[in-house]
Length: 308
Length: 226
Ligand SMILES: Nc1ncnc2c1ncn2[C@@H]1O[C@H](COP(=O)(O)OP(=O)(O)O)[C@@H](O)[C@H]1O
Ligand SMILES: [Mg+2]
Image 1 (tube, helix red, strand yellow):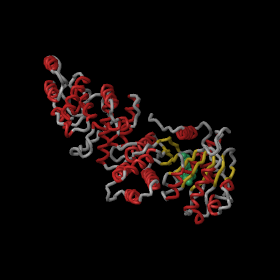
Image 2 (tube, rainbow over the protein chains, first blue to last red):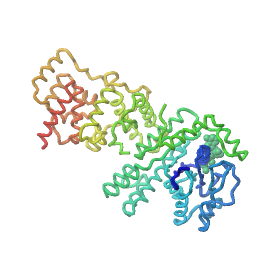
Image 3 (cartoon, each protein chain N blue to C red):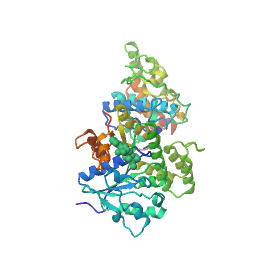
Image 4 (tube, rainbow over the protein chains, first blue to last red):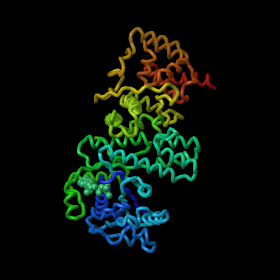
């Protein structure tokens, strides 16, 4: 393979809410990439609710991410499992929750380094629900972060919260200046006494305090580009929600956000899960398969949907 | 991505400089849905009032870019020498410069805003520039003008039977700015780069030779401010 070692793309699939289809999208993207001959590893980064192996029809594995995290003699390669698909491997999530749900900082660093050193073309991180720091850090580790959203209020709110939390964390980790960090922390609370309501206002505020840090933050914002996938859409107006969210995020967060595409509910999926077979979307030519290919295409080529 | 208030009309609509009419119309349709009242996409981010303000800004961007003439004028404005293309949210007043624009009521009906203010005005139609007698008078007046300045802009406007509001309506420049331009009251106007654009747009409405007027006026501006 004419690939430079280490040249790979890390993709994180998050979205704040549980049950929206993060693992579903992660595994289907993994399958699609593997089928197009790209070596891909799926990592179940849901440190607490790991179930990616189920989506892939793999038995609960003996060796998981928690073994790597808890034992410095175990290499990352040792926890990589093969799947029934060529080119697709899996690092299963922790099943003993206590062991890993709160890794130490040094453990986390080692894990991130190991992920970056994996000899594959694509790494797909399947994130857990919520916005705890571990989840956010996985999201920020990725080259591209995707949010799975359902066209309904709670899921949309969760996605916005996720974008905001991860952005603020990214900004906070960028600087050691205690007063800047304090401002960012305060700004997280919407009713802060500084009158900062959005990230754009936050950066403006900090630029006034310290223009050098302000520039740094601005640059970080322009390189932060979350992607959105709508799952379980039922109508044209559901699909429009993708463009609207994109629009609203751009105006509120001052971020570029790409609407990658949408998925409908695919009944056949349920059947394959019940039979513990790997999920495959309704044949190669079905609507879902086509939608997934669109999502993948936009993701890989840094594109977005265009309104019809 | 820049703060909304420093985005240009293309950025506000989220389209590229080369966007087709159709793309502009679609972007506007989506923006209307996004920022309408009780919108699922925005209720947790923006207040109703903010939604109204954003929508008003978006409508203004749409009205300018969907109209071929206004769009090419706007492009010229963006491309002008030494102009900061970022700053061009600028037909909008700088924050805090004047009382905040009252949020405009949202048009609920799906009708797209028409291409030109003449076809479907937002407010009662300003009298169209008269031709015939007044046209002749304007021509005659202009022949005598050696250098266009604030006074001559006001004179022509009055000869055309247009109020400050009429011109503000068509150019989407704030009424007070137009007034300051006529009064050559530069203290309260935004940076000079915008003045030239404003004058260009005003002379368009007054059917005057835009480039010449703008050049003349900027000469006046420089002699008075330097
Ligand atoms: N587009 C879809 N069509 C059919 N089933 C889906 C779809 N998206 C998600 N599901 C199913 O919904 C359930 C929850 O999805 P999952 O991916 O586990 O959510 P998450 O990882 O976000 O918690 C799973 O059983 C999954 O197979
Ligand atoms: Mg999951």
